[in-house]
Image: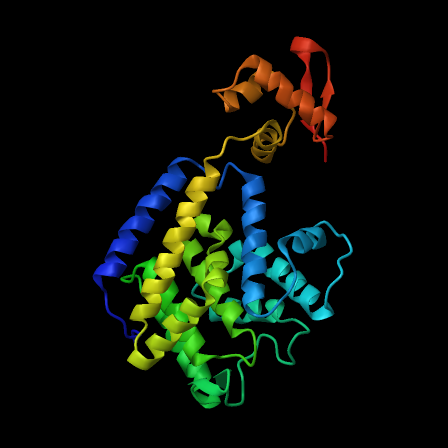
Amino acid sequence: MKPPYEITSTILMLIASISQKIGEINAKYLVQQNPKLRKQNQIKTIQSSLQIEGNTLSEEQITAIIDNKRVAGAEKDIIEVLNALAIYKDLKKLKFDSEKDFLKAHRVLMNTLVLDPGKYRTKSVGIVKGSEIAHIAPPAANVKFLMQDLFRYLKDKTELMLIKSCVFHYEMEFIHPFTDGNGRMGRLWQTVVLMADYPLFEFLPFETLIAKNQTAYYNALSISDKEGQSTKFIEFMLGIIDQSLDELLKNGTKKLNETERLEIFLESNGSAFTRKQYMIFFSDISTATASRDLKNGVAQGLIEKSGDKKTSIYKKVN
């Protein structure tokens, strides 16, 4: 059964705006061409999603964990980051309409943090905000059926992926299928759903804006609960996505420095190369700029050089 929601003028305007910005980002190859930006954005995504759940580690500390450095912090916080890094590394392998993959993702994300990672809850739960019960989830006996129905909805090809991602996020939060980890799974799986049509969402940190607008986020969930449909939540999440695309366009158009240019080139070219080949890849740079880039790369240990002057051959350092 299709979950209830209405298409409003706000939703239509946001879909048009998002579609236009996605086209612009793809045309400029902003995400594909900047590995440094991709890494930074994924760190922001992980830090923001976990921060919403009370994790205290900063972007700098998460970067240190990635670099295998020692980090001072609560053991639970560090485990949450390690689990998130593990699942975000394999996002492309997850099928957005596979309940099996969904449960697998929860198992990785909540490994050692709960007693039953990757399994639906078997007890009733309520969500408390302050001293009030904000939401009573459906009975545990209904969870499996409700989630199967929700995954059938994801397979509906008549629905726009942008809308399906928001509806799934809301409905999953409403069902609250796990004893813990529902919030981070809702945000994670919205990303997975969006990636099916728009690969750039793998590296779009829209969770950063959710973290900055937590009150509005929970209000949108609450209003949708009271109205019995996800319309308000769809409007909120599309607005968040639209703002995130704005920031990507703004930050992604910054001029690349010599190291960033070389990193981009090396990511798509693993074999030995010449300065001429480097200049063909970056057709808008001069011979002098190309020489500086390559000299800098050698000095930083990114590449090694053999030969001399025009006969020089460069190779990526493994």
